Amino acid sequence: MPKSIFKFLFFVFMLLMMSCAKRGSITGGDKDTIAPVLKASFPKNFSTNFNGKEIKLIFDEYVKLKNINKQLIISPPMKNQPEILPQAASKILTIKLKDTLQPNTTYSFNFGQSIEDNNEGNPYQQFKYVFSTGAYIDSLKINVKVKDALEKKVDNFVSVMLYEINEKFNDSTIYQESPRYITNTLDSLEVVTVENIKAGKYLLIALKDNGNNKFNPKSDKIGFQKQYITIPNDTIFELDLFKEKLPFKAIKPTQGSGNKIIIGYEGNPKSMKVSLKHGSEIIPTLVTQFPKKDSVQVWFKPIKADSLYVAVEKDNFRKEFTINMKKQKTDTLSLTPDFSGMLPLRERFAISSSIPLVKFDKSKIAVLNKDSIAVPFETEYDDFQQKLYFNFNKDPLEKYKIQLMPGALTDFYEKENDTLTYRIATKNASDYGNLKVILENSKRFPIIVELTDKTSKIKATAYTENNPIVEFLALEPDKYTLRIIYDDNKNKVWDTGSFMEKRQSEEVIYFPKEIDVRTNWDVEQPFSLGAK
Image 1 (cartoon, helix red, strand yellow):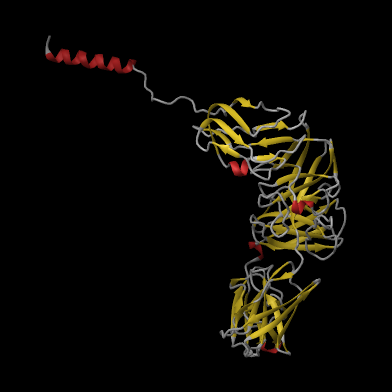
Image 2 (cartoon, rainbow, N blue to C red):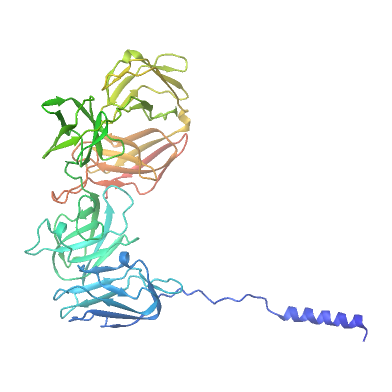
């Protein structure tokens, strides 16, 4: 056979072989999405008359523990946490109890999502191991929804607790003792179920705490039912979390500069009284807020002294301190504008002072428009925040010059300002949007209406004592969250609650959707307040 024909036949044969072959790639098969399964437990799940010290859980595949310290909820809580072994992958988990168990009590171990298969990480969702030290398993339950009293977003890992009302219970119990029953919202649950409860009367609370299951007002948020609840009960209870306002307390002062001391505080520092003495000499002072700190600044005229006597008084608090003084530099006056360049039409021009201001000479201050025509204005000084506001009517697409001649401002140390000039401009009204909110079915007045951005920062606020229509003009284009506050004590701010006073926070209602305000738009938004 000629070589050319042989080569041709061989080429055809190879093509046929290739066409018959199936193309594909080697795979490991379908991904495992099945969670582990409990094959057996010793003692058996839901056992009664339990008196052991060890529990073994046997699974159908190798499992591992993930975030067990956060995910595992034991109810009732144990003083000494059990040891759960091994930490490495295994088909058998061993729970070693280290606590003395209470008699005639149903215990529940809810593992949340902490048990996963070793290969794919599929969690055994909300696996529970339950046993009773008595003759039967308590089987009653309640459902609880946790909200935040002010914010739309709710904290995760909030504990929901029941305290049994018996001869040992009093209002201080939640500060000192762990609850009878507990569960947790973990990282996603909106409604939780407290299970395996016995019939009785209970205090129901929620805590965002540090994990010790006791209420610490300094750090924890709390929500509570004002009236004790009776179980069995098929109500879905709702708890609003809030941070209590602490009673005023001053913390030991420190020297901030040659003419200033710093005093930390808890609670509200407004109207606190500070007396400063050098021997029998009373030293005049001014008290202002330390920016972005829970501290105040106490300003005084420089004095040669090795130590100063400080007395702080507010409400029921009074304490005396002695502070040793060192030679330090004194503060100097500087003035900083809150806005430079563009000034939003809704905002006021303001200047922050590094030292408290005490005198203002309006004749040495001028506000001029782009045609150098004087614009009528008034000033307003916030002495606690050390901020000087300029109130004047702003026109769109205008340029303004704020000029302060020497001596327009005088600080606490009788130092005057140098010549200062600030230039600002405004945008066109069409660069903003307007929002009209129509409040429907309101239960009462007055009402605070607030708009917040995606970071929960308040961008605009209004107050209405009887008018159901509230207008927000010249809003920056954005998506806003709308909420109202029933201002029951009429102080124009939201007030938090108090557990000891059995007082809930002032009621807050959110509009369910974001409101999109765009440039050159007028938005009219009805807001029904008929249901919380």
